[in-house]
Structure formats: structure tokens, C-alpha cells
Length: 300
Image (cartoon, rainbow, N blue to C red; front, side):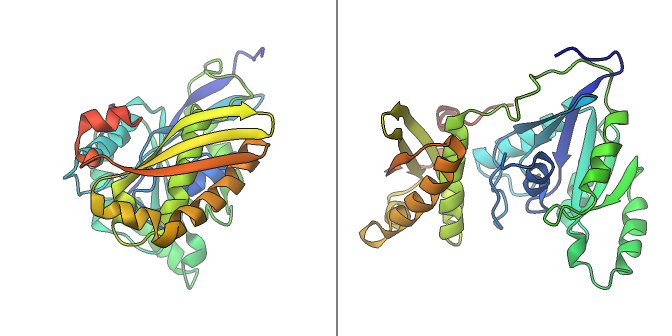
């Protein structure tokens, strides 16, 4: 693709505490599901690039795990490092917070921005939940007093409010540069990664309490056959006691997860899918950096 001399391209880190809508925002601006989304905090565990290309610019959104205070396990520490590294590499930072309330964790993230060299745009997300709407002016004034933001933009990622405006505001902050990725590429992650994430999303939506934080998914086989794709995936849990929960009575959980995941994976791949799931135990994998690396987690 030939580009003009004033073409712009850069990394835009999407930062915020857990569960403020970072992945929902990235999916909305991309017009497709790049990152899985659930109501549970820490659903996003990896750095995921979402590449938004046009004739004038390429915006590379960096979806990150939510920065959080609890960092007891190796996985939590790795997630925090992943998000912090995205800050260091960014040409522009989008700081996402919930317009309906401010928390101490938001303050923690804001403190981390103090050492960032890139300009920061504040995104007040979930404005559709702010009632009465006049309160939004108070929220804007409050966040403006907290940090020297380049811009403050009220948005609703879920309702797509002001996302077109945001896309016009980003390019002037990016450096003059040719594109870093082909214009038909939308994410840096493999099909196996997205399949594993879809399965984990369905598990997270179905299971309750702390269980989703003790499991991860690994695709061991992805083969195209005459009738479609054959996929074998392992659901790893941390303890024997969790295995029964993940399987469910008479395999009920696995059946529900498999059915829901198979439909979405078939849509992703554009062909029929035969999906087989197993649950295995790897003791305390979330607190072992060696196990995390072997399961596809990246050390920043």
C-alpha cells in the first residue's frame, strides 16, 4: 500500500482499572470482537493489538489488562507489568474511567500516568448510566482538576456514543510514519489465541465467584478437515477441587460451554466446527511464571 508523506501511525495504549470498559471500547471502534468481554474484573489478561487502518492513518490500539492493587500471584504481577509496559511504548494514552463513579483504583492508575511521557486523553465511559445528565459536567470538571489531560471525552463504548469523534481526535497525536501492519490486518493474535479466549469467556460467564480466575484455556489442536475444523482444547485449573466445578454435574458445564463456544468459533472461522474440551489440573499455575509462559502468557 502506497501512502502519502503525511500518513500517521502509532501505538495508542488503552489504560484503566479493571472493568471500566477498555475491551468493549476497542471492540466497538474496530467493529468486531478483538478482546473477550465479561462483567468480571481482570477478564483481559494479555496485551492485544487492534489495528484500525484507513487511507490517512493506522491507529494501533493496545488493549491491556486492568491495572489493579492485588498483585499477590505471578499472573497478577505479570498483568500489571504488561499494562505498565504498554504505557512506556505508547505514542498516546487513552485513560478510561467510569463516568458514574471514581474509585481509589482509578487514582492508582492516574498516579502511574505521572511517569508517562505520552499525552493522555481521558475517556469518561458509561455516560449512558449518568443520571441526571447535568451531573456529567461536574464529573468532567472533577477529572480535569486531577491531571493535565490533552482532551476529555465523554463516551459510551456500549452505545457507541462519541466514538466517531474520538477516532478523529487521535491521529494528530500520532507521529508521521508509514503503517506498521498490512491494511487488512486487524489484530496481532492468532486464531488459536482467539479460540482459547472465546472458550474462556464462556466459562467465565457461566461460573461464579473466584473460579474464573483459577482457569485458563490452551488450544492443543486446530486442524481443517473435510467437514470443517477439528479443535481440541484444554481447560487448565489450579486445584483438583476446581476440576469438578469446571466439568459440572454429568459434564453439564462443559456441554454448555462447548455449545456456546462452538457457535461463536464457527462464526469466527466461517466453517463448521467440531470442538472437544478437557479439564486438567496444573497445580497453582497462576502463581508460577514458568507455567504462565508455557500456557502462552507473555513476560513483558
